[in-house]
Length: 244
Image 1 (spheres, helix red, strand yellow):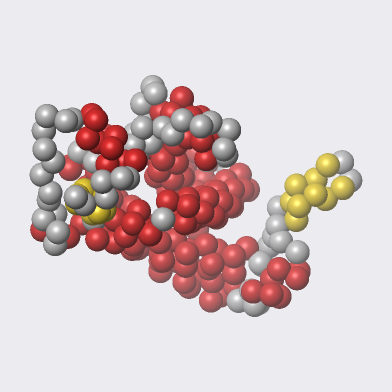
Image 2: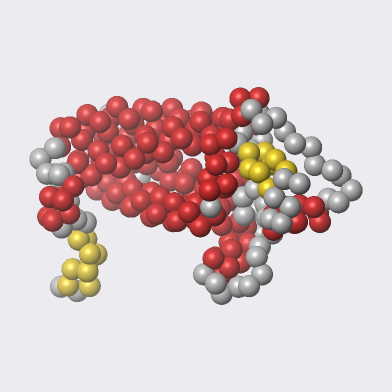
């Protein structure tokens, strides 16, 4: 018999879906700003291996000569990004959700197991939990990256008014480099995250929308849960996500 399993509280789902478009606009507007001065590249001696970014990239996305527009969007959505982040972190502490997100001493070992399984190098599937070790490390890192983006962003935005902050992060040039590197990190996280969501399937994606997932009797997760607690029949939570 199918069973309803509650996975994500309403607040977590709101913070997730608010942050996704906000961060997208921040990255896009940041690219418009970066176009005005784009010094970063990866070199090997006199050879340029990667240039962030070639002119063809800017032309394809229509980025050129939109500095003022990028700054306007970036500074408006900066406040939404900050507010949503503060509320999210505050909620995780008040609700106790932080226990699911902060890595523990087993997280790195679990992350290796999950990675090997995803790459097809490990046959045994890791145990089903709300967030495995790899997810804990990734999500917690994203929160730390958010803090870093805010601090380095203000150091770049107001280097005179926040001179102490600019000095704390290593000066204006270092703050800008860190800010850029964190942005590249978000993009890489998006790519991996979306690939993992597609791999996990529709029902997993549905859970971040509705808050619950319907498990069938033959699902591995259903079997794992039943084996772990055979004497306690599961109690299905309310289907209406507004009541969760």
